Image (cartoon, rainbow, N blue to C red; front, top):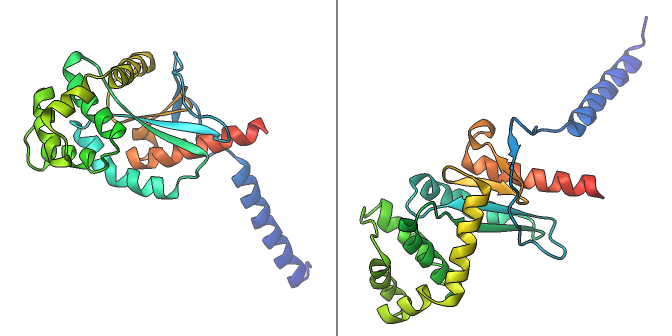
Length: 214
């Protein structure tokens, strides 16, 4: 008969062994939880950064609006060596004014502009129609309409618009929000449990890939 103490020790060892083995197993699988893009897109992470999460989004997308609180939570927890980049999608030229507004806010460091645009779209239900609508809207942030238009049509913003077009087209995404990792993986948000969960899957994927590269 096995002694009680030995039996307990074997059970404890067995449980710890199983847990250790389970931790070594991948939690997410390519082809199921994330897919490889047929055309990788260029990334912007550099130096000590180990990867980049891109959120392809639109400020006129209600799902993106609902994801904003989740992004705020994620950014507070995100390691500094993982870059997070928002890319305003441009599927057609009607989306250019919105993308210009996003980049004007980014260049001018107007952190309150994006939440305010979301609120106007989905709380006040007053959608923007053109650049002039955004120019009037941005006066609440201390810009004149002429100053806004000057920034919106500047070379700096125009370059960013062209890059957003390139990223949207090359990634071949079809909807928003879409999470792309290191320019080559797209998270299947419906499979992993939703848009906010996808951010943490992206973090895992980057850290896992970096670990394998060591």
